[in-house]
Length: 283
Figure 1 (cartoon, rainbow, N blue to C red):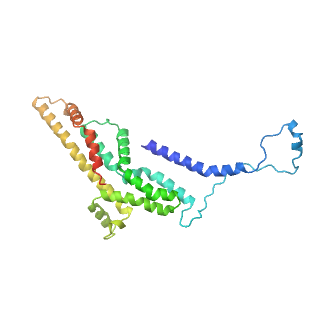
Figure 2 (cartoon, rainbow, N blue to C red; figure 1 turned 180 degrees about the horizontal axis):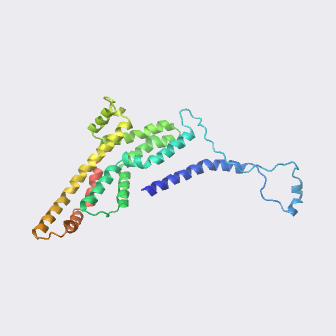
Figure 3 (cartoon, helix red, strand yellow; figure 1 turned 90 degrees about the horizontal axis):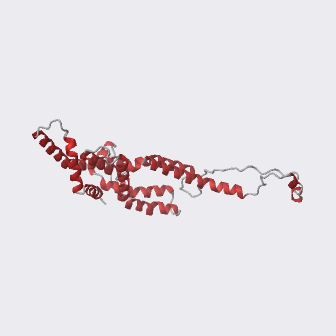
């Protein structure tokens, strides 16, 4: 995941560099300039070279100008501020992905599945994070589509300013988080912040995000408890059988692991877990 985010960051930086540098380079190369190729002694004696004015000055070297002045549209942020905001978003992208989407619940539950079965490295952490990431994109697809239609596309078309686009883009994300957040968690942070009674539509991200994270953690741990129960029963049965047979030195974990894997495969465990995860989010 870190390598993917790093690649996205470098790709965006390269795109910004091309977007800013290409117009300046094109303007400089399009301006009339003297040829940089030195003339040979034979070419210096040609009529065209002799016709050049004696006092002509060589052209200036190629210069690159980067303009960070404000935009002409009122209410629009300057280019410098937009660049700062973009770099800040890139820096906070992992935190935004983990704390404001369905990623938190999914990755915790998948980690509980691996721990309940008893295998430490199968599936690997990269596989769990990758599966959680793609399931997050699958679940958050309608939210991202709404953000694109209501904020990004009108902003690119010049129908709204960047500030209005940010406000519009936050509305679908707030609606998603509020649908997954318990009311007592919202009241808890309202009480901590001494905000007083506040309508749901007027809640800020300062209150919604931590309440959403707490609700996701509690839901993920509840699902993890239910996942541990059938495998715990297998461990107890295997331990009882080994004790009855007098096999004290035989580790119960080694004996119960094949039965856990067999049970998980027979009930089509991955389908059940993924279905439960997707359906646990309120549309």
